[in-house]
Amino acid sequence: MDKFDREKALNVLIALSLLIIPFIAIEMDEPFYVTLATRVVVFAIAGVGLNLALGLGGLISFGHAAFFGIGGYAAGILASHALNYEPLMTSLFELNGTTEMLIIWGVAVVASGLAALIIGLFSLRTSGVYFIMITLAFGQMIYYFAISWPAYGGEDGLSIYVRNKFPGVNTLDPINFFLICFTLLMLSILLISVLKNSRFGAALQAARQNDERLSTVGIHPFKIRLTTFVVSAMITGLAGALYADLNRFVSPSMLSWHTSGEIMVFVILGGVGRLFGPVVGAALFILFESIFGGLTEHWMLFLGLVLLAVVLFARGGLIGVIAGKTRHG
Amino acid sequence: MTSVLFIEQLLNGLQFGVMLFLMAAGLTLVFGVMGLINLAHGALYMVGAYACATVANYTGSFWLGLVASLVAAAVAGAVVEILVIRRLYKRDHLDQVLATFALILIFSEGTRWLFGSFPLFLNVPDILSGPIELPGGLLYPLYRFALIIIGCLVAIGLYLLIAKTRLGIRIRAGESDREMIAALGVDIRLLYTIVFALGAALAGFAGGLVGALQSVQVGMGEPVLILAFVVIVIGGIGSIKGALIGAILVGMVDTMGRFLLPSFFQLFMNNSDATSVGSALASMSIYILMALVLVVKPKGLFPAHG
Image (tube, rainbow over all chains, first blue to last red; front, top):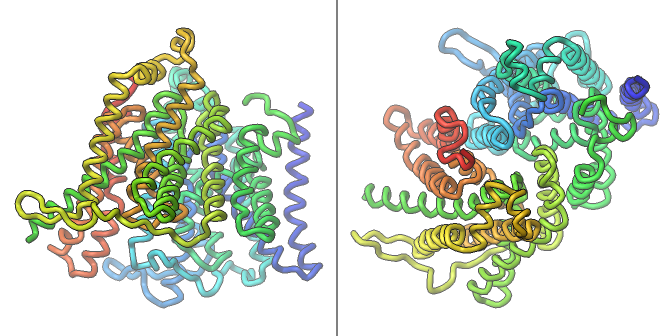
């Protein structure tokens, strides 16, 4: 039990330091670091989503950029309609865009969930290497669709001129937006933690380890996996909506397979299946990007080398190194 | 007039398909024999294209460039196999995906470092430039026509290699039972390196050939890699025959979709809407094809193992 407590203590430490950093940055009059911390938080949410499918469910999805991007486009499309005073549709009844974050999040979550439901229905019929390639392919399908569909900017992307609104909070202040994102990150981690320890979580982990046994006790692994995939996509979709608001810009690059790879890297660097793994992974990634990105424009080369070394020699990620192995791998 | 255009597009689809086959064959071979998913296959395609463009521009001979593309990709493949890939065979697919994703980053940024961000250009060799007159008076670019022929020759060569030679016997044996052929005294490590280098050489060769049609630039391998994945998912992972049929199917559907769908939608929409709906759908067509194949046959058209 000692190791488990060590991971819990580490988690608290991670959450607190992430929360404190922007306030220190404000004190030191370096508002840029608030944005950087917000990026960490948003990427971490995307990673938390993928970690549910990948870490707990063993579903190696290489298409999570699709959900990240759909969430982003939900925010971008709704906001651009509202800001341009163009209704979304007029035929059946008039539907207007909105700049309310709460509504945007809802739409982003539902849209990415629906996309995951359809993609999951096809791709979860397969497993292993097929599943990886098919999720990758469906992700690319949506990417190419976004590029060739001219209505919302096509290849150029879509700008959100003013950050969307949240009731009672001035979202234009970076620290407020950070706190909104941070709260959502904590809530999503809480959701995963509740799921993990529920009967559903037990069934999911059983499905990862042994399909047949799960079927013999009367649980349908496909339904469990599909539900997981959809919930995982919803969390990543929410991150996409926040990312759009953070940058005030969405573009097809959010949907590209590099983004899928990066979200996966967050999960791996931190530690697969760990509650706070994606947080640590995203922080490492951003740290790496800002340190090496400042030194050389070829920092991706070094990211590749580090990633290669982690995969070959340090399985379990950073949390695995510090907190020790889990009871079951 | 339209039938001429139609046949020309069919040939373009075929040409695209055979080039995809060169990519997909290596991927499917490596998966079939070693059970490895290799995202860095597109990087080897890029290596071939850069080698071809560099040597061709330096020596003035396209053919030397092609030889260079084969050699450079095979060497790069062998080195990568010995340094990295070898450690991944016993790992799960997640580790393989991540390590080869890391290789893409290394190859792409390394190439950008060496050659800069500007694309290189590679000219079609003189004897293959200009059109060829096909039966029926149809004029078709000779170079593209040559690509179709070369692709078919490589497919036949690969078939003969696998069906008729000792190396081919070992490759097939490696696909069905790894432990057994090791027990029979075949140097399995060497075999794996050879198979990986062979797949890399095919990808590099495709890169060199296609490099003369488009610009040679960093990241050029990635769209092709993903198409090659779609091909082998449709064909059945591990099956060379599946890769060939899948590649031609994908090449045809993609090319014909881009050609026909916009005019199809013009039948009941105004022109600009039809073009955007048509081209958006066309870009999705091969993925829809893949989804349909998976509904009917979740293991692809020609499942390799039973």
